Length: 273
Image: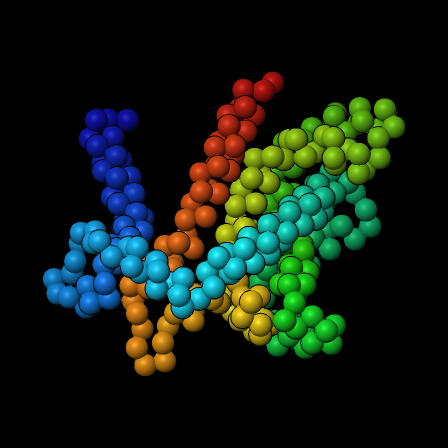
């Protein structure tokens, strides 16, 4: 690679990083100023001194800590269950043959093509018949298995898990679940790290479905609670931005923790024989 190409590449990467970081920077700027700053021209580009005032407004208008706890509960349970069922199904699809395997996998992929909005009414009717309206079961159980998660794990497992390992396990008398638990899971850690981040963020940021099935304010998840910061005739932009900033921080912390494990697992796998 020539020197000019390296300069262009680094300049492009730097520009991409700046563009990616700018919305978060702007979020912090708006969260540290009052609402009037969002309407000024030219725009305010510097941090203000109103952050703690805005935090007090958020805590006064919504039960923020309760909504955070609710969201952590739902997101954690949903992520753990998705990782378990999706990894188990993906492993079986990748390494075992059974009647109708290809057709079932194609049907699983086909469900990814259906817009989620089309399933809202049937899902709501089902939750109502089950008596799960205003219950966390309506948020967790419909998403137990992820079609994308099955596809992702299957694709990873096909190349990462050697058939010789499974054959040796069969000779030792291991069943399917023992092979999954003792052989597949350690190898699938990088794939599961990504899937865990992807699933946790999706559940954390979900707004429409919790808004439909939850009626009790004490059970609101974070996104639904933050929506209550928007007034009917006037919106406190600074409070909304502050609530959004506070709701984003746990995701950033999670990403920093899991991404390190994700990168270390990939690096470890790259030097294995």
